[in-house]
Length: 173
Picture (cartoon, rainbow, N blue to C red):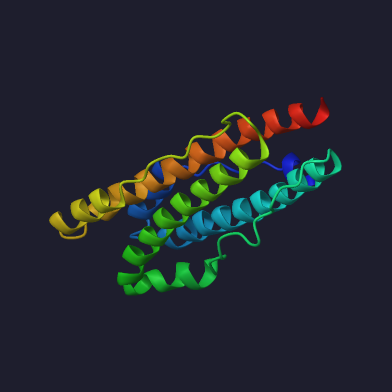
């Protein structure tokens, strides 16, 4: 179970944000690149894990539908470079929020079909609330929204680590 052995790396928003302020915004480029790469890597791993779970359950005699594909990957270099134009920052933060919600709902549905008891609780991401804060503050709310997104991804990665431990335990029984 190779996908299970890897761990998602935590993203330290405060470090990246302070570096961005100190570098007059230059550190935003690698920060966004890191966020997108972490997202892509996690979604790839999750898709592989789902395939492994489905295969394990098939061997045990339980037929389960494997999700056809995961959420589409984002090109980290292109998106990170596009933030020079400012508007893509708003689009990117929105997409990161929306993708996390879709990913967690998909993951919850798959795990509910694979295991009888509930193992995962998706987070709620109030995208409309964050968008409204961003609009009311004339764009400055995007920093808060980005902070919340990074924290939500970190919380998801942490919950996923615990979930993987539980899945390993069940598969070894």
